[in-house]
Image (cartoon, rainbow, N blue to C red; front, side, top):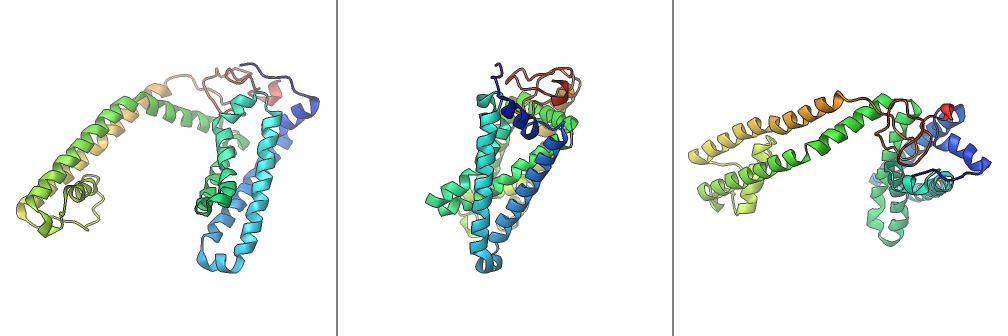
Amino acid sequence: MSAREQSPLQKRLYTIIFGTETPGGKWFDIALITVILVSVTVIILDSMPDYHARYGDLFHDIEWGFTLLFTAEYLLRIWIAQNRRAYLFSVYGIIDLLSILPTYLALLMPQTAPLLIIRLLRVLRVFRVLRLFAYLNEANQVAGALRQSARQIFVFFAMVVTTMVIFGCLLYVIEGPDNGFDNIPVSIYWAIVTITTVGYGDVVPVTPLGRLVSAMGMLVGYAIIAVPTGIFTSKLMSGAARKLTVNCPQCARAGHEPDARHCKYCGAGLFDDKE
């Protein structure tokens, strides 16, 4: 998808807002991350009853100020983007949108206000500011390994669910309501807690046979934990052997050759200093 024509002003703003190779671009992203962190701090403090009682109105006004600022920045990004559709549906674009929606939704549904903590995800831009492209490439390798092993993990997950249902039903039959296993869902909950080695202890078997089954469940839990790890690791190692790629500063997508100059998905420049 080719990039659209930009005016001189749009090109200059694009270099600053989307780019990280210029001093202006670096300082913009650093300032943006600072504002995001301050905004998230305000959200966290406002969730504390004592601070909310004393500074609730102030926090409300500050949050609206941040929301209007981020809204203006989001609209500006859309206006100057080389490929607007690519930005809107990119990881960064979706996160930018989600970071401002909760404030407006809170006007209709006040219970959605805490969702503003999503704004913290925008701090992911720090990877671009610090030129940590290698870390972004590692993240892409992890995501690729998850996609490649999705079917195997799903099959494994189905087997684990089946195992938990079996253990839950066994304990329901062995222990029964008299020992806290009131129904099969409660027994399955116990099996999940046991096999995952969490062990809350709110429901425990008391009969010898029940304890024997419980011990077997714990051992099965330790045995199966390593399975998805092995599947994922094998895919990750196979992906690590491939060539590293660079990430688009606009749509954050990978899959480019190391020497690529433009994004093959949205057409944006990968490195401003190579334009």
